[in-house]
Length: 226
Image (cartoon, rainbow, N blue to C red):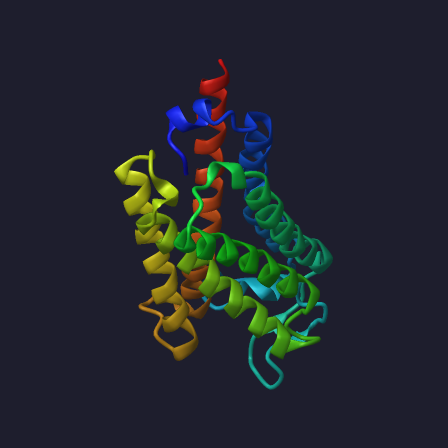
């Protein structure tokens, strides 16, 4: 991101950037939706053994077929809407804050990764695990990889010039943790967290970063405008 002096000297569209930060903060809906949809279950739900996608499963049956985990999500449509909405939040927020991002090949890759993450979330919401598992898995894998990789690039590239070292290091750390979890959980390495727990490590690093970044952007613009 550009530093405070550049925000003023380049006459950046502050209101647009502020809205972008606020949009990114709306990514908290992803967590709220999970709590609400999970609470509606009348059958056992475990953060350790159930996938996030089980909340969007449209059937009431053992899943995967032949498995021993019974999945029945009464508010599945709300979870799938949340997945889709998260994609909108990522893409729209990213486009709105573009004036704040330095130009360059590396930062361009970072922006492209953010947009691909949004597209991945669209796919997760459109293709449920029980209706079209292949495309659901492809979409989930896409957003796990691109989202966490984007955090690493944000941390090491000039896109973050002008922000604290803590933010840069935190971005890299979250990205590395998310990428590691993305590799571990489908290969059966759950480190005592269960498959659902390790999946959530892979899935949660990016939205946590998105919400935090949106808040920091909003605070910076409000202070600059005061």
